[in-house]
Length: 430
Ligand code: ATP
Ligand code: MG
Image (cartoon, rainbow, N blue to C red; front, side):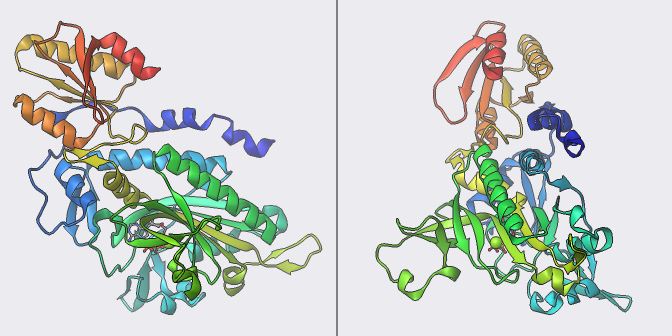
């Protein structure tokens, strides 16, 4: 069908084209690792990411993604983009500065006052985006008239601002953070439900590709909706959320949807968890409030069924750091590591540097993203930095092995082996 022409390329192929491959010298990377994280940082994710040079803190809840961190975030973004596109959704970008009037239409200027950054400038009042339901409904109201225009599935990657009271979990809870938010509108409740479960499956594919074990929990809707929602939770000892499970249930639950009886049931087990995604069904409540109508087949005015679906991108970088690490540092999953290979040259005498350059060029020419630690410092320092940064594979060129050979070690394993650079490349690509 003509509508699908834009989707003709397989998602991964599009992804590789869109993303481009990057290799670089560690001596040129901004910034370098630091010895110790600032003492006020308590969370594992922030301590590790700060020390390894992935993030920097401006103030509580407000972090920069430095070049290494941005590389990881972009890979996560690309995985999410591929899975959202595969559901037929279209990417766009909405503004972050909103007029008060749009938030008054749903009553959320008042009901979400605690979380929303609101301010006045030159006699006008504004809010910074904490979510985008109202903005999407305004777009639909302007551009859509009849049932033929549905379904609508649009998403963007952008910043959210939330006045978080407890911002002590590093980049798991920022006052400013990146989110992917998808919105869908349908002419019937059945169609909304059908798409809602499709998005649930797409989310599970995203988390699988990120190497994360995620469980789905039934939850309440907060300032968003009165009906039940579903949260995607990563079980982790430092998680701020508590989730509950009993063998007879098909989902986990969070506290908001538990009865008193269930809370006291000894057969119900609990885990600490980190919420990485959340999906919502609003029915027609918001479209009625904002008068977003359409004419149906019989020429009658109806209101569309509305859903929204979020994944925290910055939080995801933090969750991966929180889950994949050891006493030496980070251990990135291959799908989102900032580089695929960490190349180390030992003993900066000309022969080794030449060999390093040859290896670096061969790797890059074969599309393998390589970070080359070309600095004139001790072997120990280079190995420590490689362990802290956590690129999945380390290869060493030194005068202890024959020219043309490299010593290969996976970050998550202890044993290393010596192979030719060509063999290494063909193994990695297969
Ligand atoms: P939480 O319960 O953790 O405060 P939430 O339920 O308010 O989160 P949603 O509105 O459902 O969050 O947002 C969708 C996703 O955005 C969340 O699943 C989470 O991954 C991410 N997210 C929410 N708040 C933050 C934050 N303060 N910092 C970083 N990521 C966040
Ligand atoms: Mg949520």
